[in-house]
Amino acid sequence: MPLFNPSTREKRCCLCGDLKPLEAFYRHRSRKDGRANACSVCSTALVYQWRARNRALVYLQRQRYRRNSPKYRSQNIAQNFSERARAAGAVSEVRPKDIRLLIESAKGTCFYCGAVGELEIDHMVPTIRGGDNVVSNLCACCVKCNRSKGCLTAAEFVNGGVRRYRALVYGQHASVG
Image (cartoon, rainbow, N blue to C red; front, top):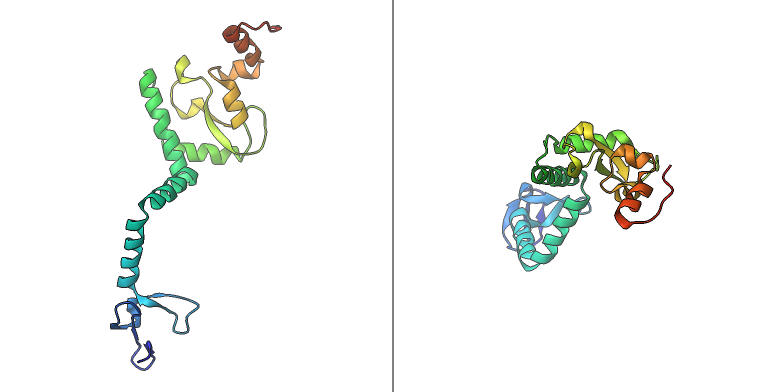
């Protein structure tokens, strides 16, 4: 018996063998009838079975998506900032939407050096030094500037504060002028 009967607009599922209306099958462009071979119930069951057999892979895929998706990335940053601010006793008013808008408004340009590339969010006055977790205290900067800034304020960092910081922390002699 054929899989598809155009006169009755019914099709036989290749997995369960039942004759069902075309609407019970997912769309599939490359097929002549425009529908998949398996009905939607059987297709869904196959997906659930595959996910049950490959739980670790599904978990890794979700983690990768959440790490790389702009929506989840801004949520993770906002949550991390809020936890750190609470631990430091600072005010925390940053939402994921604020993080997204801040990164989008920077248009890929670092606040400190003007380099174009992937940006991170930085506290201009670090929470460890009394800065609050509010939008007015945040800026978008490149990874290199964010890592080298450390616990300096934005003003200290821009005015050659890295040399002074290293001199204080590591006991190096730097020409401080």
